[in-house]
Amino acid sequence: MVKHTATSVVTIERYIIEQERLYPDAPGELSGLLYDIALAAKMIANKVRMAGLADIIGATENENVQGEIQQKLDVLANDMIIKALDHSGRLCAMASEEEPDIIQIPDNFRCGKYCLLFDPLDGSSNIDVNVPVGTIFSVVLKITRGARGEMEDMLQPGRRQVAAGYVIYGSSTMMVYTTGQGVHGFTLDPQIGEFLLSHPNIRIPERGRYLSVNDSYEQVWEEDVRALMRRYRGLDGVRDPMSVRYVGSLVADFHRNLLGGGLFAYPANEKNPRGKLRLLYEANPLAFIVEQAGGLASNGSIRILDVEPTELHQRTPLFIGSKSDVMMADRMLAAPVLAEQA
Image (cartoon, rainbow, N blue to C red; front, side):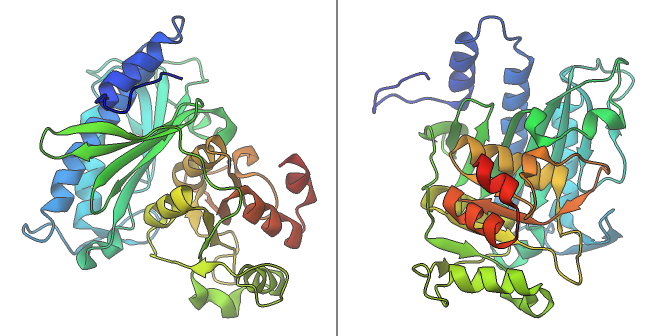
C-alpha cells in the first residue's frame, strides 16, 4: 500500500500509477482502463449536475432489455461510457444494462484483453427528484481465444473480476474502486476537475447500523425473510434494532452502508422469484468491493462471487454489507455453507 502524508494531494491518476509501480510485471492496460472510466464519470457527473437546467430529465419512449422505461440520462450515460472506452484498445467487448447483447468494439479499433460490464446510471428513475444516482462497473479478463469478446467472456463468476467500482453522483461525486488490493475512494474536485484520494483503504464495520430494504414487498416475502427482517429490527429481542434507511438507489444505499456499516437486502419474492438486481453488473462488482472492505455478499444461498452466471442479464436476490449481518441472513435463510466460510 502506498502511504501518503495528510497534506499530500493525490489524484486518481497519480494513485493508479503509483499502485502500478508496486507490481512491475503487471501490464498498464488495467490502469489506463480505470482512468478512462474516471474520465467517463466526469462527463456523466457534468450532465447530472445540469439535469434540472437542460432537457435531459424524464423518460424516453423506449424500454430497455429489462422491460424498464429508459430515462434520458440513462441513454446519455450509456453512450458516454461506450464512446469513452471503445477506442482505447484495452477492451474486447462491453455489456450494459441498457443493451440487449454484447457491445462489440468497432472494426476500426484495436481489441484488448478486458471486458467491461456496467450499469450506466443506477437509480435513474429518481433523478427527477434529485436523489443520488450512480454508475457501477465490473472488469474481467478475456478467456476465449479470438480477438473479439464472446458471451463466455462475460459469463464469468464474480470471483474472477480483476477490478470493480462505482461512482456516486450526489452532493459530491465520488468514485470507489478495487483491484483486489483494498477499496479506495476518490472525490471529484469540481474546481480542478480531478478525482482526489479522500477515502483510502475503506473498511466496513463488522456489524452495521443501517438496514436498507423495500418494506413494500413484505406481503410477498417468504416467512423466513419476514422473520429475518424482524430480527434486524430487534422485534424478536435477539439483537439491538438497526435503523431503517432506504433510498431506492442501490449505489446510494450501498455507499452509506459501506462507510457506516449496515445491510442492503433485496430478497426474492413472489413477483421476482429469481430476484430483481442484475448479477453481472450490479451484484458482482459491489460484492467484490464489499469483500475487499471486510464485508460479505450472499444471494441467500451462496456467496455472490461464487454464482455461476448463465445469462447476460441474469437477476439475483442480494444481501450485502457488514459481515455479521449477512451471516445472520445466511443462518436464518438456511445457507450454512456460506456461514461457515465467512
